[in-house]
Length: 260
Image 1 (tube, one colour):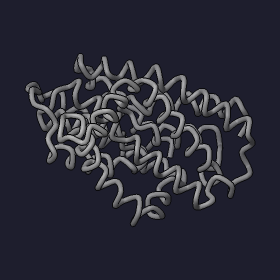
Image 2 (image 1 turned 30 degrees about the horizontal axis):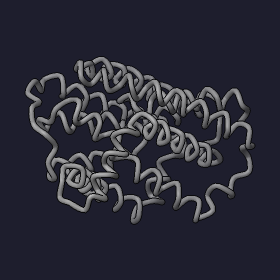
Image 3 (image 1 turned 30 degrees about the vertical axis):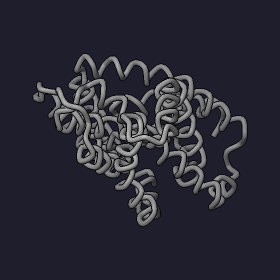
């Protein structure tokens, strides 16, 4: 992988991580179009995912700081409740990450037809939100768990994490701006934890086919484009524009199947 390919893939990851179009699916498609071996680019995937986590922290740093202060007040306040809801949402993806890690990684082998099929699933889920007009309540603990199940399913390439979690929250009747913020914050610990486990397991040192420069370029590109996409997506959810992404995912899904 050269630095230009890393730049393009980093931009692709950053933009699609927050938009409901599946960053993992687009990353796999991008690798296929550039003839990059997906088995030898797992390190790059880990690095650019870490970059988008950092962009999330930057965008929501005020909210994160308020949650931390509320937690260390050692009271059952709104901030503590919110953190516990995020913890509940992490249970499903935690189970998948601990017990089915190898099975999940087996899907990241360049199977473009599978990616296309999952993009069609994402399109269908996003389309359903178009018919849901009433969104007035806050996220409760049961909602958190159900949204967490959507996040666990979204480990599959082609299933959008932000798309599936936001759509699930909207279909449950949660407020648009509330579910968008929750969707972006709930992913922080799982991705940071996954990257940490990969570091402990030696994943970051096993593949020497990608140099330091492409990794750095990819990280910076994903971080900067992620900042833009995260802020943009919050506005789009408030305006209820997800139907356009459903159409996009449907078209790209068919393209991926045709490409395969």
